[in-house]
Length: 399
Image: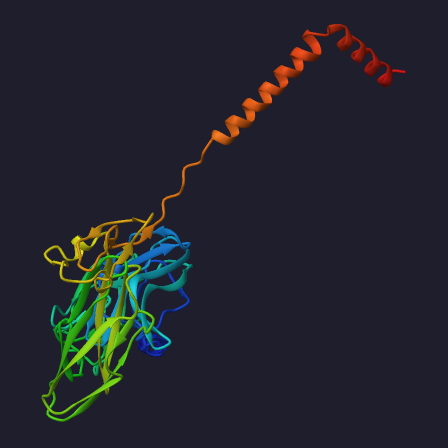
């Protein structure tokens, strides 16, 4: 019996140990605890409200899950549903890096659920030593199960049918980055939320995120202060979407505790809302500076207290409408306009000329007059000739 337990322990350790990267598997059993590490291509903040489980690509399935973020360690865990089928975990509106540039899109992790339910599952899927060392293991077996827990002494725990609460601290387990619980590999995180695990901040960025609200055609520039927090000099590089943003520097070298201002602006006048980021990197430390740009319907909404009377229309920027043109949005009081000109915050439009029915009415009236004259002179005043014409026509048709 000892050899059987030892074999099961070693087999489960070898199988799980091969997945210590916590990559998504192709197939899971129903009611199985899955844990996946979020790839490095997904940057920025990650909230549990962004994570959804879908069946067959469109059915939103409720499930017990969680998100654990500790600096550079980010995991999504959950207990798979009982129903077999094709599933996918989706991170909605994730900030990702593609071809060196950040963009916002949904990230999907597809997998299949099939077979029989797992004998047991556990929650939470990630142990946070700063929060609690308790883990709940749900056994679906009708009898007690003996499960091996990885430790120097080869500890075993007995699971009764139903829910079992295990205090990992009392088991005296020497935690590393993960430990083995029977068939599962369980990740362990430390540190406060938002702290980089083992990577001290190389620099600080102020403000930490940027927002702009503007009308169509508007533009803006942000001033961002970067402070070197280290006792030695460092070089900071920037990656961003060049079709959306313009950054004043290609890279930045800072002496110890030195600060510098970085200027970020829109690459072209505003046409639509978007969210993007500038990724600042120094060595193994990076910081995603998130930028949110919101298109509004009027200049007053984005600059309620601003006075434009001292500006020229192109400086807003705006569009000068003249002649038959009218403003397709809000007009703005500015200087430098000529008589008959207005400054428009959106765009100038030329009103379409209304369709005239007069020529058609005149044509129809002329046709009516001609028809009436023909009837009067050919039929009413000379009915005999009209009858003769009808007889000739009939003979031609029926000789």
